[in-house]
Amino acid sequence: MSATAGTARIARLAAGLEEPLLVLDPTNVRYLVGFRSSNPALLVRPDGHATLYSDFRYAEAGQAAAAAAEVEFVVSGRALLKDLAARLTGRIGFEAGFVTYDGWEALGTGGAELVPRRGNVQALRAVKDEAEVDAIRRACAITTATYERIAEEGLVGRTERDVAARIEQLFRELGADGAAFASIVAAGANGALPHADPGDRPIAAGTLVTIDCGAQVAGYCADCTRTFATGPLSDELARAYVVCLAAEEAGLAAICPGGVGAAVHEAAHAVIRAAGWGEQFGHGLGHGVGLAVHEAPALRPESEDVLAAGNVVSCEPGIYLPGSGGVRIEDLVVVRDGAPEILTLFPKALLTVG
Ligand code: ZN
Ligand code: ZN
View 1: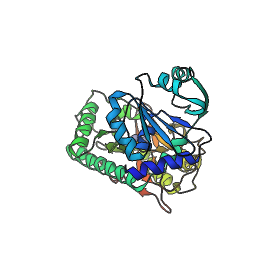
View 2: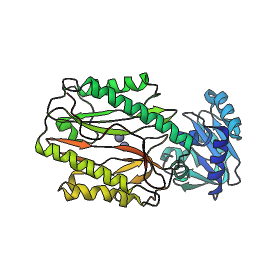
View 3: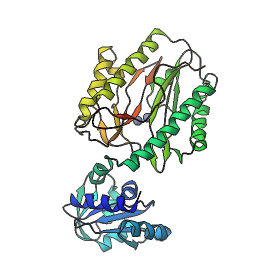
View 4: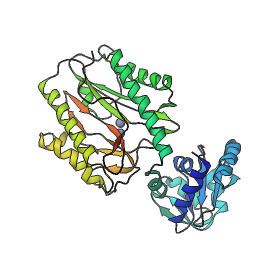
């Protein structure tokens, strides 16, 4: 991120605050000031002044990040929350979704009046600037190139675990930092488990293989799923693929500024329900992706999130048929005025890979 991006992000956060907000989620701190630490805190005051804290291991990097973002830096003790408790007074907002009960107790040992706050930084993170979109676009291009290589190299006879390891090797070879999350490779009946762990059985011919993976570039994540055939399919699996693809396209068509999370989910779910598999699609249609692979906004039945231009969201319906297999197709897109910009460009027509 550029120095001016950090300054602007802090100013936007400050503008919405009623009292100082103590940001403790390391991903939120990284977003605001470009500082990577396992033990950071950033106190942002409503007037826009901010103080970054971290222990001596991070003193040098903290100084540099603070200078770039035009905030103060203070070296804290390793027991960060205890240290902060002794420094803070008055009403202090804290990230209720991140601080543990133990952490809340430690923060409460000083004189501050703790006020739970939720989603302040997440709401900013949900709308990407073009530099962020560019990093995600590069991560998606590497993910697409990886799918091309995996399809060329073949699937039948390899184990799910082998394919998953190869994906992560390709990400690095192609210039990514690494994998954004543990790759899912689920063949045959394992495909009916949305988050199957890759196993050691060789992949068989004549079934579906679901691969869900994403590279990471400059801290930003890709997230893409494709389902391949390994030979002629049963009528049921062939039909499941056609229905899932139609649902995915319906979901994409509903993604636009002003779209409500629940309604976008429903656009895809209705297609699967009409095919008689409404119960076999048991997860949300999609989620925001950025520095974290799961972030705001949410596309799922109970979501009231409203899409805005600059959101980056996944669209990933699935049909899971216990005992026989499953299909999931996932694109990552940027919400734009008009049609979304699709970042995951590997083809979606059913591809047979031997
Ligand atoms: Zn995924
Ligand atoms: Zn996803």
